[in-house]
Image 1: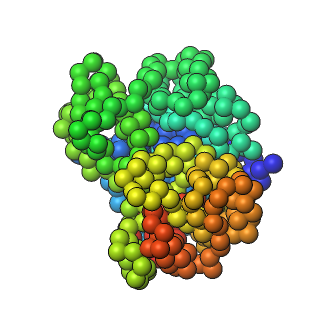
Image 2: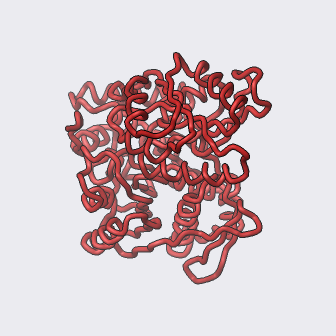
Image 3: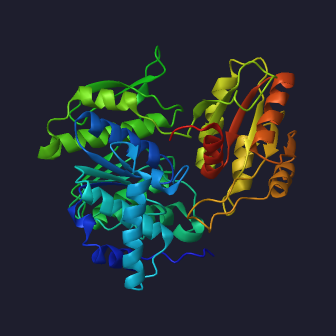
Length: 435
């Protein structure tokens, strides 16, 4: 069983004593298992191109808690974060609310968005939806449900239907809902039933965008009125065709139904989509500052594939890359969070001939409940797959990178770092990369 008991009582208490900042926010609220973050980023960048001031909340953070909270794509400054967070902590203490660190973060974000008078708050759900601390909007601009799969079963339920109902908890009576393409048919059926049950005013079920056969980084879809739009998809992976389509459809629905968005043009959509960044997900980074000698190319593919659906998407992407390689093998650098379905993820990632270097990640700031799997446990789980995979453990991330590129130089193939967003964060800190 989980150590958490999900409830909205404390977040409402906290926000109430903070003058209810959420009541003054126009929110786009996004739940789902995979694709929440990139969908929120696409929407955020498009709205910015349309000269709207945006706030965005994404959890978990990548490198430090404040990078969860952004205005016009830029993380809140350390000073503003600490000042706002401390004010929320005082409220929590004075009124004996005993809010969790996550609830304190959400309240900090909403208070900052309100203080900055953002035009739109783009808010990603942390876990589930119905009882997630972000779920305090009675009438959001849009509720968006991205792809649903297996994750957090201890909190959300042991069936796709149960998980889907929890995600659908962000749907509100009289409000519009956009649903991404679903891998699980049971998820789509459940979401449709929930939208009808909750009295949502409109439900849009999105079809994936279609990739241009001549230009793989371009895609197209039909807008709600049937007219086509073509746009650049800067984020890698076929699953981005669904996330991008969801974002474009959401913006199109807003500009056709809400007066304050009437000014958004196709060019705003195209420019915003083309400029979107979402660090740590199917991203190439240069590790030459750490890895000396060995192979000439020091590009590392990084992806925080922390659940089975993410692992499958990553493996599908890697398989396409390997079609052009003389040696179709992957040298994995891997660390995982305790409580995740690591065995299933490894089964989806690994092929005969691959190698894996098990690693750990550092303690996560303000998330004391997050712990990493021990390397010996990862090695054991790989061996239990009974595949021809050379698996070892590394003392630290630098050691793992050097081992992997040494193998790559001798055996060919590619190097991929994956398993946990917190492991990716360690890499970003090591390389001094911006988030």
